[in-house]
Amino acid sequence: MTEGEPTLDMSHLTAVLDNLKKMNLAYTFILETNGLILGKYPNFSKRLSQYGTNLIGEPFIHVRVSIKGPTAEKFHILSGGADAKFYKLQFDALSNCLDVGLSVHPAVMLDFIESKEEMETLRDSLLNVDETMLKKLEFERLFLEDYVVARLRRYGIPFEKVLEVE
Image (cartoon, rainbow, N blue to C red):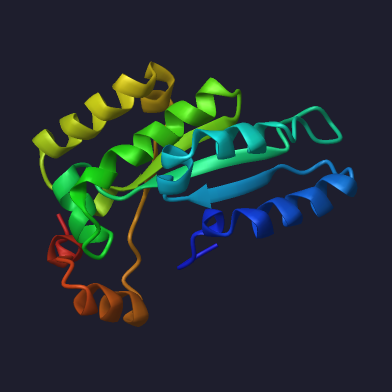
């Protein structure tokens, strides 16, 4: 799902998952989230873990937490001005998922990591959750479609480094 946070309406999400679970399929539902809700409300992670496995014994749900930037300051910028204190909730989401046995991994936009120090901050935050999170880290790339450039400009998010070719 793009430009929408599926965990904002927990009752709708669980209704969708309930219906999918009834179908007894051999698929894993990938829940892509910014992690803020799962970080703030551990009981929701617990609720998601109750779905267990799918028809072939693999996790019914896999959570992909899209980390918004390598630092709290970048989180503030990339999230459209959200308070930097909420940055930690993304990592709490990873911990909460692990605590209840949910399949989970973090992802981050590589294009917004501009220094070795920022990468180290991200690494340390992931290691504070669990060393497996660093091993499972997925790097995303930014594709500068016209609508993406317009949105980045609208929110004042710097992206010029993305355009540099080395």
